[in-house]
Amino acid sequence: MSRLETTTPAAAVAPVPSFNVPTRDAVSPANQGLFDNLKKAIGFVPNLYAAFAHSETALATYLGLGSAKTSFSNKEKEAINLVVSQVNGCRYCQSAHTVLGKMNGFTDDEVLRLRGGRATDPKLDALVRLAKEITQTRGRPSAATVEAFYAAGYTKGSLVDLIVAVGDKTIMNTLHNVTQVAIDFPVAPELGDH
Image 1 (cartoon, one colour):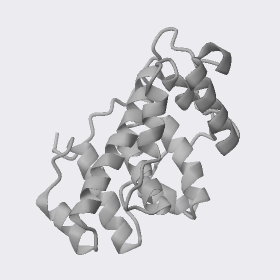
Image 2 (spheres, helix red, strand yellow; image 1 turned 90 degrees about the vertical axis):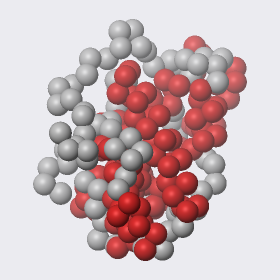
Image 3 (cartoon, helix red, strand yellow; image 1 turned 135 degrees about the horizontal axis):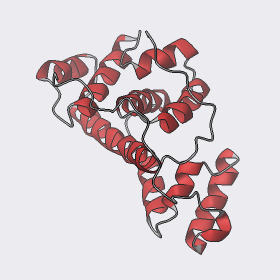
Image 4 (cartoon, one colour; image 1 turned 45 degrees about the horizontal axis):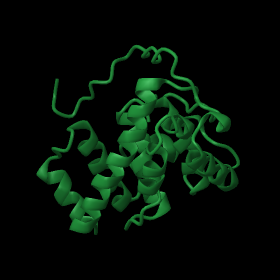
C-alpha cells in the first residue's frame, strides 16, 4: 500500500451495540442547554452532536473547538470538512457537509470534486490537497504538497489552522465511524469518478 492510500475498509462497520442517540430529557442540564442552542441555531439537534452528550463534557468541548476562530473562510472550512470526511470514510459527515458546502456556495459537482481532494480554484486546490494528504498520512504530508500550499498564498499560521481543522473533523468522523448513529441529513452520493 502506498503512503497515500487509505485503510478504510470497504465493508460497512456494525454499530456499537446499544449506542443510542440520547434525547434532550436523557442528558445533563448543561447538555440540555446546548441542545436548545443547537435547535435555535440550526433547527434541530443532529444525531452526531447528540451522541456527544453521553459525556458530561464532550459536547461543550467539541462545540468550542468547532466555533473557534480560524484564518479560513466558511467556504474553505467546508472544503476541508468534505475532503477529511471522505478520506476518513464518514458517511454522516460527508452527508452533513454536502448540505453545508452547498449552503456556502459550492455546486454539486464542486462538492464531489472537493471530496476527491481537488478544486478548480488553484488556492482552494492547494488547501484540499494538503488536507487530504495530512489525513491520509496521519500528519506526514510531502514537502512538495506543503510548499504548494505556501506558494498558493497560505502561511505557517494557515498550516496550524489546517491541522486543527483536520483534527476537529477527524474527531467527528471517528465518533460516527465507531457508533454508526443514524444519518439525519440527505445521504450524500457516492464519490464515483469525480
